[in-house]
Image (cartoon, rainbow, N blue to C red; front, side, top):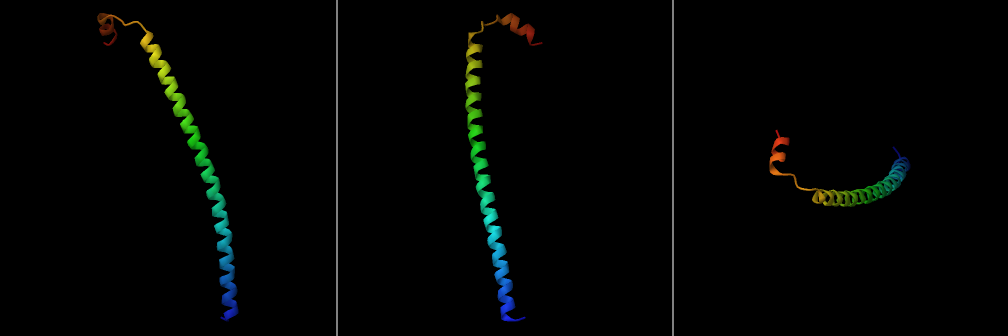
Length: 76
């Protein structure tokens, strides 16, 4: 195999590697953006869950306490 042929093959492989590298960079950028969006959504949902939990706790605190005898009957 001649030196020029080897150089051409190496050059071709390097070109393919560069194209693949650029594709991977684009994919990585897109995936990073998706992770950021999902992280923001998760944080928002956690915040909403905390607020809902606080509202439920406040409503539970406002409920009158049942006498001990009626609580025992219901837990049979």
